[in-house]
Length: 487
Image (tube, rainbow, N blue to C red; front, side, top):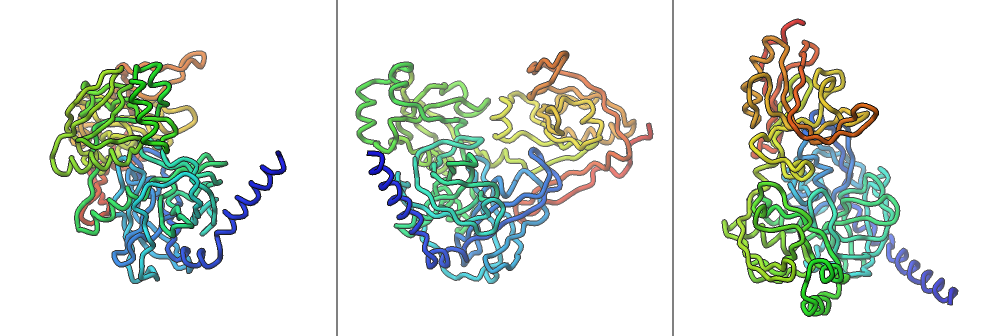
């Protein structure tokens, strides 16, 4: 019996790896680019060089698709560079970074790309057992090739809930943004965005990218709408046992969606002050949106919400809550409007208004929306604010600077001249991270705290960074020319 299994395994992998023939690689490599950049200011995350992968989606327009975390839209990046398979280095411009789905679109000069036609793009959901090929900057080596198999086309991964497929292969750092190519069908079916660095990689269905590219090609700005729901998959058995999901409906569901692995979409949590807050609850199962059955397809739900938001229409949901079917109506809101497109650097700290990613991490709600997550080593802020142990990262919400109440970045900018005159002021804040207290006890208290800050000339000038949606570039504005008062 063992010998038979061994033979089957050998035949399977021989077929899989043998499919990556030189002609196919020669066809795909010209469409793959290695992307590198260097950030100088970051709302959150490290300020450091980064690397990733992308691929040419539309040769005529020069559109290159990659990941939002490769683009780092919440960071000030003065230049993106791409290395083509020929070894030539070109510059890219960031056109769009998605606030929820880990995708971004760059644009290059089409004449520099060296290709004139486009790869075939799938318009169908991925299937279990699909043999795939990935070419990218795996392990930070240009144009590394991996082959694998789609193990599950319906997963949820990422900071926000996004539809993903799980692929059995070993994907390492730098491979983010690689295309997932269906060898048999000859089509791109996804974009790699994460892995467990061992046996599995996760890819976003290419349909998300197609929607974004089509909007850009029509000379429109893509937008992302949401209801404020964070989803997870739950087994039908658990839904029946713990949430009173009707057993007869579960049987019908399992027959209709065999690719669901006997799981359905369940609400994991609700973003504070979103459309769903006070209407939906954790544990609700969404069966339909505006008459469309969702099944396990989170992409279909996201696409429908986006279309309703664009059309300024409401979302009508059919849900199951503890065995009771209910119809509820919600209004989609724009996540795009809450993206980080402004930052203020003052006294070595970076101030920004919370986007949905940081709201998801913190549970932030209320009128105070300005956060500090990064402070420069040696600054007065890093000395006094509760940073994560061994780092220059925090997660605090600013309530006051001196006597000035802080609700928006404009409030920060208005307060800076007065604060710099004396160089000494207090900061009132709430800590949404952790603090290591006496005897190494971890403190999670989120009540208001007060600390005093001293500024020095060496802390640098105050600057506002703003992303221009027309030029797709960051601009910088010096806020105050005077240095802090001498101490």
